[in-house]
Length: 349
Image (cartoon, rainbow, N blue to C red):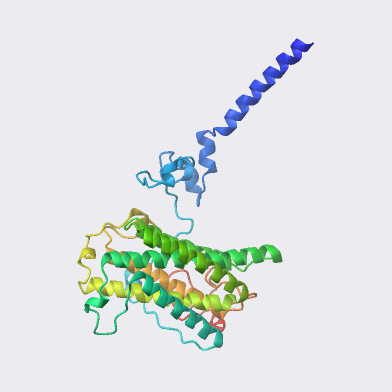
C-alpha cells in the first residue's frame, strides 16, 4: 500500500513538472497572441518582424542598457493623421488673449515657466533684427538640449489629465465623453517627439539631472492644479504649446537663413521611427521633421484651448467625434485648424 502511494505521488509530481515547464515556456503561437496589437494584421505578422512584441525578450538587459543595436519596436498605438506640406507651411498660430482671471493666471504661470526653461537650456529669444547677434546664436547641440527638455516636460500634462479623468470615470461609474483618449494620445505624441530626438542626440548627465528634477516638480504641481481647476490647466497647456510653436518656428527660420549649416539639405539622417510615425515621404530633411513636430504642437494648442472653453463635466470632446452640422467642426488633422480654440457655440452637439 505504501509502495503504491509513493509511486503515485512520483508520477503526479512528474506530470506537474511537465505542466509547469509548458506554462513557463509559451509556444510561438502563444507568443504571437500575447503581443499587443493595434489591428487585425498585427496578429498574423511573420515571427521575424521586429515591429511586434512577439520578439521582445523581457529578460534581456539590453532593453534597459546602453546597447541599442537590437530593435524592439511596436506599431504606433495611435495612428498619426496625415499632414500635407501646404498645411504645415501655411500654419499660423496667433496668441490667444487672456480674457478672464483664470486665463491671466495660466498665462502668468507659463511666462514664469518659460523664463526658467530658457535659463536652464541657455536660450535667448532675439528681437526682430537681432537674429544674427552672437549672444542669440543657437548651435545644433543647444537646439537638441532645448528640444529634449521641452518634450520631456510637454509629455506630462496629457498623461496627468488622462489619468485624473480616468480615475474620475471609475469613481463616478460613468463614461468620460472621450476626453481621456485625446489626452493620452497627446502625451503619446509628445513622447514620440522625445524618442525621435533621442535617436539623434544623447543628453549628458547634467541634462538628464535637469529632466529628472523638472519632471518630478512639474508632475506633482500640475497634478494638484488639475484636481483643483482642469480649465486653468488646459488653458495653461494651450499657452505652453504656443511657446513650443514659437521655438520650432525660430528653428525653421534659422535653417532657412543658413545659421544651421549642419542641418541643411540631407546632411542629417532622419530616424526610421519618425518616418514611419509621421508618414513622411522619401529622404526627409531636418527641416521637414521640425515642420511635422511644430504642426503637432500647434494642434495641441488648438485642442487644449478648446478644452479650456468647454464645460469640464458635461461637454463632449469634439476632436474624438466629428458631427456634420453644415459648419466647420474640430478634427484630428489640420483641415479645420483654429489655433485659438473653438468656442462652445461653434461645436455641434
